[in-house]
Image 1 (cartoon, helix red, strand yellow):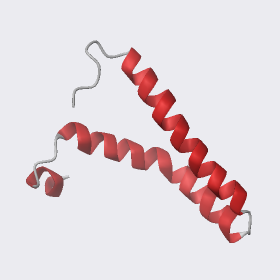
Image 2 (image 1 turned 90 degrees about the horizontal axis):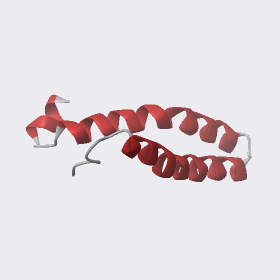
Image 3 (image 1 turned 180 degrees about the horizontal axis):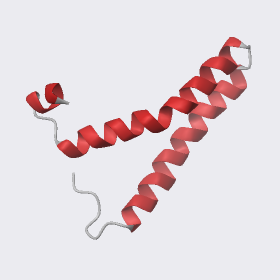
Length: 72
């Protein structure tokens, strides 16, 4: 975190990155295991589906609970 702050990255971006990495780790593990077992369709579907869900649902629900939206 100190490295990102030294580069001038805002705390919002740092926090969102940490949350995104934490919520994506289960999907990464599932995709890696499916790929090792030869189930490449499951691996790709899992990655695409989780990204679509994260973009639409998580940001949408988060936007509902903020008063002024997400400041960039």
